[in-house]
Amino acid sequence: MLNDENHARLFAPSETVEAAAWRAELRNDELSDITFNGMPVLRAIRAVVRDHDWRTLVPTVSRVAQHSRDGGVTLLLDIDFAGFGSSYTGELAIHFTKNSVKVTFDGVAPAAFRSNRIGLVVLHRPDDAGRAVTIGSPGGASTPSFFPVDISPHQPFLDLSSMEWERDGTRFRLDFHGDVFETEDQRNWTDASFKTYSTPLSKPFPVEVSAGDRVHQSVLLTVTPGSATAVPRPASKGVFTVLDGGTARVPALSLSATSATAPRTRSEPIPGLDALLLELVPGPDTERTVRGAADEATDLNVPLDVRLSVDSPQRIGELLELLPLDNVLRLAVFDASSHVTEPELWAELRDETRRREFSGALLAGARSHFTELNRSADRLPPDADAVSFSITPQMHATEVPHVVETLPMQRLVALNALRIGPGRPLHLGPVTLKARFNAVATERDDAAAEAMATDPLQPEGFTAAWLLGSIAALSVPGVESVSYFEATGPRGIRGPGGLTPAGELLAALAAVRGCEVLEVAGEVPGVVLYPVRDGGRTVLFAANLTAQALSVVVRLPGSDTTNLEFEPWTAVVRRVD
Image (cartoon, rainbow, N blue to C red; front, side):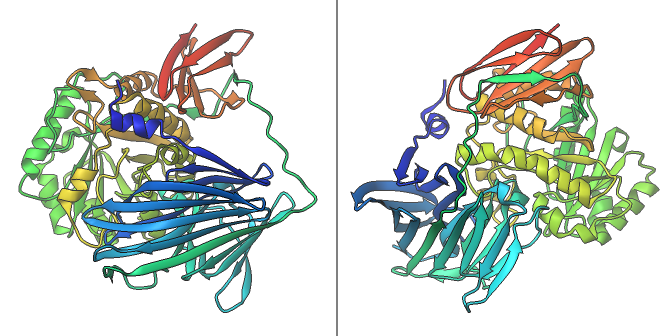
């Protein structure tokens, strides 16, 4: 039974706004999925307030007023932002006319706080990748460019005041007022968007915001309709066709060791599980952490996959001395500050493991997001056996639609990582619903990071559905293993009552490790179908990532069909002989 908090997140209401040829969804404070004449235009426009550690203050809409006049529609939203000891308040005005949408934000600080960003952001659609765009600067110059196809490690557009592009014969333009804006590629963090935001990162941050300080910004979206009209997508008939063959295999799956701060429940072995991932940081409890993880690995009957995080090369030997290296499958090392494998750390790890005759694989990459790997690709050791980085879907937004939309981006970051480390396999993880630590904090606050690391949705069916979407996205040649969640505890797959829905699904997938993933024709929005050939039978893993009950038909190789019925936010497993 969902508690009130989880139910509110999974079944959050949205309001459809229509004016002339415009259509959008109002989801709390965010104007989402903006279309013109049925044509997708922008992913979203919203106002954000971030504190000195880039933590997003939670917006609460206290009032929505709507007015219609002269064919136009105006929405007025009163928004309170709060969290992490800070607060802010503002009004968002959204005005639709026949050929424009204007969003204006007026904000004021009721009390002093430190901030890295306050203002409007525009989220561009991920399918704008490769699209031509003209960038206008505050000085009046215009520069032709393109939205990047490969994930851009740095901001593709700087110092901008306008953007102009074309889609299906229709011309769109954005004008920004109240600050200088720039664009970053949020696909680095698996967000399904490019983001244009105010206050360039080249300016010093954080800044001291005094009580009474105000912000006034606006974004104007205009359209010049062309002769072409959007071609409506055919309505889904709820039918998948499973093809007889595929190029991917079910990757090896592993778990992270239970956090030291969480109560640990004894784990039963999971057949096919690959390893137990241990993130090891020097400290007074390091020996106890190693012993706990070794015991947990023994319970699960798997080896350890160890990721060291150190502030100097000298720490590497100290940590290796504590590890049962004969039961360690893989080793990686990352810098505690930059979060990537720095050259001097790699050299020390390589030398120390050779001296100890370690026979496992040595990994390099980033302990944080793909972002840091992408930005330090030139420092990736050429002799690393494999590459690693972590994934979390909630770096920028916690709303469930945003979390779901990260799934196809996970495949994109994996493909980009394979490009960066050509010929080297990927061992991905930890993959967690919430970030394990704040990789961009200007001040270290371990207690705050620990408190934010657990998502209340962890034990729900939603997490199983999201897990299947993630595994399906990451099942590409070259991805050898993926580590999800923790073994037990509030961030784990097992609680006092046994395996969670995500745990049951992971166990079922571990049992078909290395089996062929069959290709699928057809698409049903919000449904993931992951068919696996296990010997002479097919195992259908499927998930409903929507808030509605769904029914789909699956056509199997040959002439057989099967029906799948889903409750909202659930995963199912069906074995077909």
